[in-house]
Length: 448
Image (tube, rainbow, N blue to C red; front, top):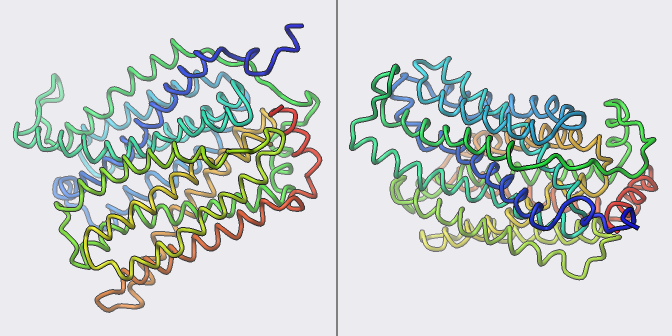
């Protein structure tokens, strides 16, 4: 009779699920805090090492995005084969040490390598976390746990600005900090160390507290080689359309994060000092609210058929961004700009809450890490890199006093329209026709 217990009861108690979800969400929070704090420290870093804009771009792009994307594939394969809790803990410790190493870097090369270490460490945590949560629960409970996990970027991104600016102000007034052996360091270096070292404690908490869940799989005879994984993914038009759609979501999100402060400044809606704290607060509070409110999208959905209706609802949410984005052209006050920014953040947070839902619900267990790694590679190499770059190129071509605003609106509107169309195409039941039997069987077995 015990073998017939519900999946949730046999995998983990409710308390274990809560503790696991909270610790993994905390890890995701710290990862975004460590990731985003560089944007706050760019000017003192530039002054310290006499960096060019190209080198600054390499620190924000190549040193992080490219290495994050490539490392995700390798670490995703390890997640499919080895102890996931250990991998998650090792990744948290690695990026914490790498972030602290940014604080003791003595030149550009050392700082570049430290940022690379941060990226490689962070690349393995999400594939491991998604896989762990998928084996602890299923159906709507799984999507709710994932929603809590996805509050991390919004809490971490906002806290990077809030705590980072507070720490920078404190250490600037104190004239820096003196460390044993290392000696005196500047204020910006102290911020990196203060935010990085707690990652070691969090890694220890994860390793000592969490237990490796038993891998659950429908059909033990499924070929889970890398070749079979790629064949499985690319033979599903539903997954490929979803992957492509989320590349456009990521492009739009990074356009918003990278360019909106500059848009406000160039349109005369505030200075960098004036807009930093409000934008950070909006990103934290509204982003967190959007993650939690996203659960409304799961109402009245059957666990046996979650994916198709969920994708259709996500396509509607993304489409709502188009008129909101177009309204930026009429924003003539900072208050209106902040309000529109909040609308963008809440829709992005609601959609990104379910970013790996198709993978969690349909991809076999020992393919899931590599499927997530490939998903992240697409998003960081294409969406996160090309979206912001296109805004800059289009702005240079247009010229004029409002060229950046127009480029910002055009690229964000196009990305929203493309993602909405691709999500809707992915939601159609004929989208998974070539691989449909296996996808539906795996999803039904996991979520009933």
